[in-house]
Length: 296
Image 1 (tube, rainbow, N blue to C red):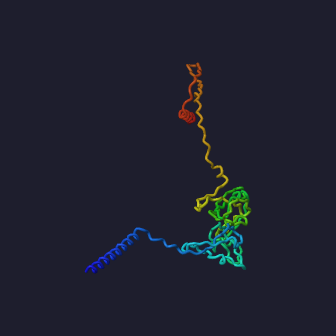
Image 2 (image 1 turned 135 degrees about the vertical axis):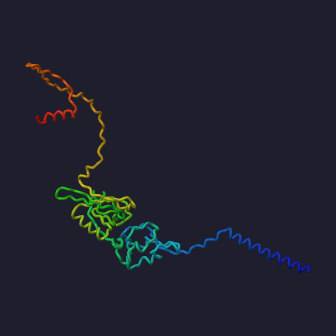
């Protein structure tokens, strides 16, 4: 009986300890957050050095880095061997900074050359106009910025006016540079814009009937504004300068009037001179009307 009691007590103690340990583990799991499982990753190709538009990509300009599997950019290359081929050339179509992922849309296909056509959006065209240091905003227009195009015309009779031809037009290239990350302004002789077919026709016609000028927009400004034709006579429609109110001069006394009055007594006539003030305007008008009235 003693041995049975010892065995039963030992079993109860062990069973109780196991139950308490289980409950303690459940409480600990409820208090502590679950361990975050490391996400699977893969390699992608990034730029090892800054790349500019039109440069040929070499192995020394690329490197592979680890990247989370769920956040891989669309069009990224997995290995450098996938990008380069000893028999073909890859050209950068867009500027890229160091450690920036290399995407298929930013480089040419195998054997292709760098071309402006790769930068044009579907349904759009590239149209160029000639500019100088004045109407080209002194060379401060860079690829990727947006401008308004102003058309100035002079008619045969000397009448001149300026219209806003297009608004918010994207600049694709300045001269032969399409690098959107260019920082140094330069005096350009030609600017290429991204326009649709109708706007390309307007540009072609505008260059033959007048002169075009560029108006640089603020960064991110895309809102179309209400415009009006400006003529030569509108240049004088400035706000008039304030006129100083001069003190009114003291009113001078009205001049006196001399009247000659004749008095006849019997057969003798005698004249007298009398000085009087001028009559009011209404009285003068009445006297004149009476004088001019025909006598019966």
